[in-house]
Structure formats: structure tokens, C-alpha cells
Length: 406
Length: 107
Image (cartoon, rainbow over all chains, first blue to last red; front, side, top):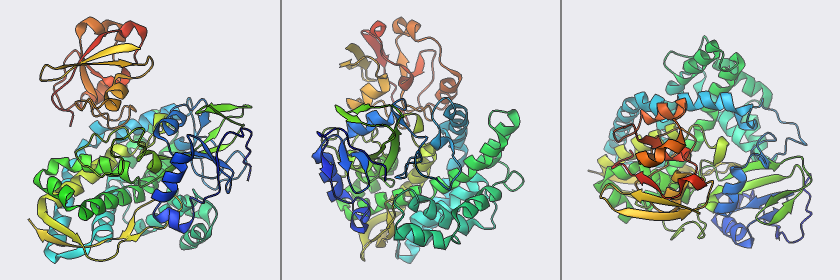
């Protein structure tokens, strides 16, 4: 641990945001953090943190003060080794710019329009099959199954070995937090060697294996033009798949669970399925699927944030889930309201490093939630939902439901 | 502070005083101007902050970058020569009283 506190006016908390309880249901910790002050020192980990919207946004949008190059997880790569090769997520401008520009082209709204029809058809068929069963699992049978059905195809991933991606993705997110039991268990699931697992991922997305028309092939096209190095095409394709599966399936699961729990909100959606996209937006504000994002202060004696001083190379975690409930930014923050203006939340980050897959995540969520809203008149939770226990993500393993067809 | 005048599709005018350096999209989202959605947060990945800048104010803005130009092609409301993405309009002193016309739909 390399945490260092030089400003005695910063409140210190001893609470553990990575306790199993706080990982599964973070609202109580989030509220405590947010109300302790604009900037707080978490002494267990020796890190700085904020749960206030304006402060988190300020840190994320100023890479001059808060760099991503020492990792966006809990680990401070200025002091510790990391097993994964750096992607554009761990680079700041100007190194970051060409890769991000290419990713914007590939994953921006104009280029992903072509996937809409396929996503809609897949969603409709999947929902039809499940609705005819009457009872099913919202998280497993719907959100997870849908992502596995559309995302690897969109990326152009070969069929063989696809199931291993999910285990590696989960290990990757566990590795963003502390080196605890959760991390070591996830490492066992991929064979015990993180480097080897990641090397396998990049091998599965090499040029001759990715199919035409997918994001992978497009990225290799940019490599051919010389816009990005060939090695980055593989890294970006692999990282896109790893970063885009759990985050999105959990995000959709959280949205559908919130709706299932609130008949009056679900009724609004059922009567106007066009609200689906905004329902997802509101859900991301209400319960972010990736609730913490890290930065590190630069190697300068002091960095100012919220009127406080932070020394060199200190880890800062922006608690975006907490910021989504900040009453300084949001009216009725604890109310889930699919008709509110929900954009402007920080669940996809902010600034140059905001989520590059966010538009495809929205498209996936919109298609699935809309298909569900059209075909389901009423939905009821019929068992106890089980939360995901992840160092870095939030969502549901299981939400058993019963539906009445429309 | 810079005064920004938003003109809704129904002809209503909403004036907001915003700090210099903020983008027109940020000002709109923070103040509940619901005709501007701003889904991607200003990273040039969507076109849901599309606006029509009054010709009297557009000169200072210069031309749209290639990336902005490409995104504008995906705008939900018709693109005109006044079309811009409001996330790319960073307010400066010279924009005092800028008139922004809002499109009927963004998605």
C-alpha cells in the first residue's frame, strides 16, 4: 500500500467498500461516502475516493491532473506490476487519441446501425420463447443469453472457445479490485495464469480468425491503413469483448429487475415501449453495473480536488454509483423513474476515457428491453434474486420471474 | 457567464446563463433542456445533441471536424447547413447571447 495523506482536513473512513456485503448491495456504503465529504480517504486501502457527482466528474474530465496510465482499477500501477498489456484505457492523450478515434468510428452510432435489425430479431425470438414458458430467469435466460447471442457475433469472434471468454472476462474484473478470495477463485477458473489467459484471448482474435463485417475485421482494416498498429487491432478486439459482456448483461439485468419490482413503472414501459432506451439510461444512473472507476494523481507534489490536497501518484476512485444518487445533482435521487432526463450520469465514465462501447450497450439494452415490454403485460419476481459478487461489477446472477403474455 | 438562448420546436425561448468553457450540450443536460439528450457525454459517438445554430452566431464556430461531420449524418432530425453537435460548441465570451434552435427529435 502506498497511500499517503497530507491534508488533515480530508475525512477518513475505515469502512470497506470491497466487503462481500458492500459489493453486493453498495447503497449504504455509497451514502456514507457521499455524505462524509466531497473527497474522502479510505484508510484500509490507502486511497482517495468521492461519491459526489461534481467531484467525480471533475476528476474524470481532467487527465492533466488525474491520469489513467496507472490503471483504472484499485491497483496503482505506478507501484505495482499488472499482468495485462496496456490498452488505450491505460493511455492518456496524445498516445490515447488515434486508438480512441478508431474505436469511436467502429463503435459510434453511425457504424453500429447495421446491427439493429439483427439485435431486434434475436431479442424478439428469445423473448417469445421465454414468454411461452411463463417462468424463467431474467438474468441468466434473458440478459446473459442475449449478450452471448449477439456480442461475439458482432465482434466477429470464431465459434470455438467462446465460453472461455466469459470466465476470462470475470477474472479480469475481479483483478480490478483487491487481491482477495474472489480474485483467486476467478483466477482458478481460467487455469491459474492470468497472462496465459489473456494471451489466449488475443490469439482467438487474430486476423485470420475474425469474421468479415465484425468489429474485429474493421479494426484490422484500420491497421492496414496504418491508423493503428496491427498489435492494437487484436488488443482492442479482445478488450472490447472482455469489457462489453458482463458490464452490459448486468446492466440490462439491473434495469429489468428494477422494472419487475415496480409495477407502476413497468406499466408505463409496457404502454410505451419507446421508453426502453431511457429506462436503461435511468437504470445506469440508479444502479451502475460498473460502480467504481479509478484514476491516479500525476507525479507532482500536490493535486487539488474539491479544495483538498492530494500528494503524487495517489489512487483516486470515483464511485459513480454513489454519484448517481447524489442529491446535489439529481432530484428525487432514490426514485427509479424511467421518464426522467437521466443522461449526464457518470456510469459510463466521463471525459476522454468514457466508455467506448456505450452506444452498442445502449443499442443492445434498448432492443432487449423493448422486445420484453411489447410481449409481457405483467411481470412478477417469484424467488429471491441473487446478486453477483464481483470486486468490480454489480448485477444479478439470478432473478426468477413469472410473466403474463401481452 | 455566457447567456445561451434555447429555442424549442414549439417556439418557446429558454435563456440560461452558463459558465465559460462549458459546452452547449452540458448546459442543456444540466438544466433539463430535454430536446438535447447528449447520450455519449460529448465523446463524438452519437448525434443526440444535434442543434441548429443561428446563422448570426455560427461564424465564430468554424466548420465541423470530420468526426463531427460523420456523426451528424446519423442525426435523427434533418441535417441542414446550420446543424452542429452541441457538445462541440464550447462557450466563450464571443458567444454571448448565442441562439440555439432545438430539433424536434434526437433518437
